Length: 293
Image (cartoon, rainbow, N blue to C red):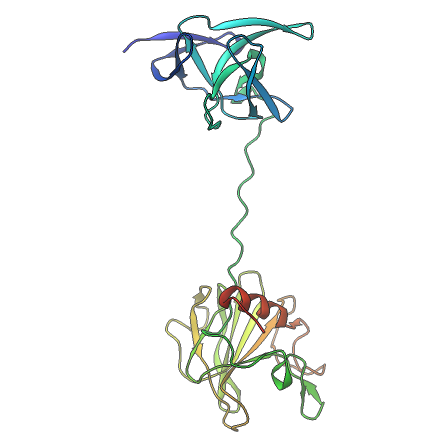
């Protein structure tokens, strides 16, 4: 294999042993592959690359774009005065530039090894994936959860208390789904008129109570079990008074308080961090089914 030497910024002499042919201008040109990674090291957003005459701009490279030096079997460096300042130009390839040509001449002072480019920093890590919220029933509710006795805040016990949930009417025995990933913090317990409930603390700290489910235990659901978004956590139940359709009684808490969810002290008879889940349910319903009440 042919071994050659390439002179580059800071008078750095690189021993290079690998070449890849990338094109042909007036002379054969080859990209020099070596151990150092070079960048377009500028403080502005874009750097112009010029043609062989240095008079015509071919395209512009982005700040901190990777720049690969080119060995030309002809003239490797050129000088040109711009606004009274003399610059030494070298030829580089900009791989991220998809159009042809992706090579051109630039002032040597603007192409530096990554380690010497003082205004370069590692790009920020991508944001964490947003929590994947989903609607808690397998299919859309048969009735609106925003009206009548089903809505959050509806009157109960002749106005003595308010409804602390949204009631999602469905079909007895149908799957109930976790609205997000989380952990079971209270396993299935007796809730109301022959139905049960479980409580899950979800990824962002919100606590959901899934009430009026039946007595069948979903696979893998137990105290301290971890759940995923959309996982089957129970089954739709029916209260034994015969007053209502089969439903999921869905309560939501923001997680800023602690202790039992049911307690005296206000007209909801619930913990202080109780939330109105209606807007979130509307969003999740639309995202899942393409429509909402």
